[in-house]
Length: 225
Image 1 (cartoon, rainbow, N blue to C red):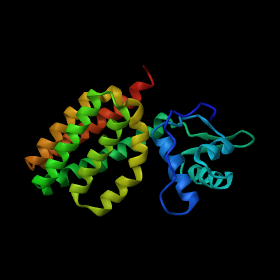
Image 2 (tube, rainbow, N blue to C red; image 1 turned 135 degrees about the vertical axis):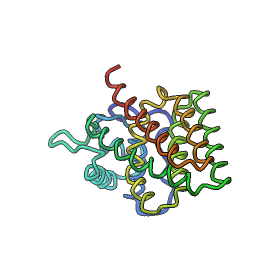
Image 3 (cartoon, one colour; image 1 turned 60 degrees about the vertical axis):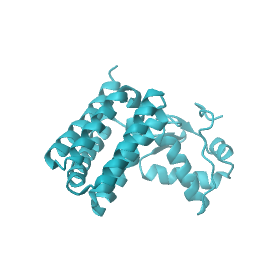
Image 4 (cartoon, rainbow, N blue to C red; image 1 turned 45 degrees about the vertical axis):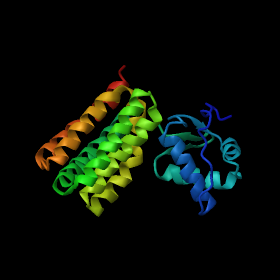
């Protein structure tokens, strides 16, 4: 087992095509993003290799890449550890997220059709069901899909590319507060859908800003509770 263990069934299968080092990187990043590997957790190459069914070399290469991207800290004479984000790091990223998502909501309200609104409503219904079932993993995934759908409806490739760069870190920060945000988050999603359906760009922008600000505040509040 790893130093702090992994939940049953948490280790992804490496079945997709592509270079092994890339598949190992994606697998480890997913484990970090979902917090199956917790911030501060010691990452031992041999143990990770055993869990993933690979040699140590692609694991070493993946850890070096994750270190470069800020997901993993490599400490001399100690090894690799999952990065522990500071409050300032989280605040900066979630502030940028607000800017991107608010503009996406405005553009979606200007351009969305009935099919797009229906897709948002379906995702919202699934998210509400996940919350009711206390399925945090599903709620986090559906939250990401909901916001990604709004970004898609915005039809701005540059905006989508920028949002994709922060999406995984948003999921990383959202996971520990998903249960706390719970039903309220999806109530806010419903209001967003109504604004987009009404083609009210100003209201959609305001609601998205408020929604993402609530997430930012909840993340900071969790450290004080």
